[in-house]
Amino acid sequence: MKQEFAVIGLGRFGGSICRELSMEGMQVLAIDNDEEKVNEFKNIASHAVIADSTDETALKEIGIKNIDHVIVAIGENIQASILTAVILTDLDIKRITVKAQNDYHQKILNKIGIDEVVHPERDMGRRIAHHIISNNILDYLELSDEHSIVEVKAGRKMAGRTLIDLNIRANYGCNVVAIRRGDQMNVSPNAYDTLNENDVLIVIGADKDINRFEKHLVIDD
Ligand code: ATP
View: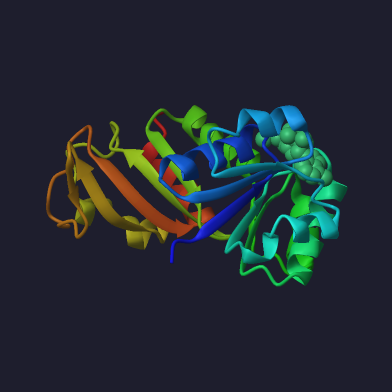
């Protein structure tokens, strides 16, 4: 049977999740305590209802227990977000994803047993910061508290050299897992191939190693 989703909080983030899931043909129940927001999603989501998610009875009445995956996208009102998360945990919802507004919010959500906590503003800030440091850093994705994956363009320091010559693993402790050249993706790059100026390297490693790699090989002097 098709998975059913619910999005609580139809601000920019929750609204965008709701739109994308609906566009992908998913069943989505859109929930907000603001009538105007709910009206906006009447023709987008499968169902759109006005409810205060801190009210357990109201959540039960709209059938939240039948939902496979609930996304809580209330940001500003941290208390409402936490209370909603507690109620959903008590109701044994199979999968719960909650948007955190800041690190404290994230810590509390982890403490009450929410496994999937997303922090879109912080993550996007980090990605943009890395791109600002160097135009050669195309993307930056956090894998854990200490590990990341980075997508970098072979700039002046790498172009014309081979992986064996750059010796990224030995010198910086990180691994080149793939190289993209035009629309070709090479997931087991040959250590003896010469890198071209616009090749894109996908590099995985510990943050401290990635930072050294970026400083020495990616950021132009
Ligand atoms: P964004 O940046 O994604 O726009 P935000 O972080 O500013 O969002 P808010 O605007 O605080 O987040 O909340 C998003 C939505 O959640 C709002 O539309 C708000 O009406 C709704 N919301 C807030 N509290 C509740 C609640 N208790 N029950 C249901 N919806 C709520």
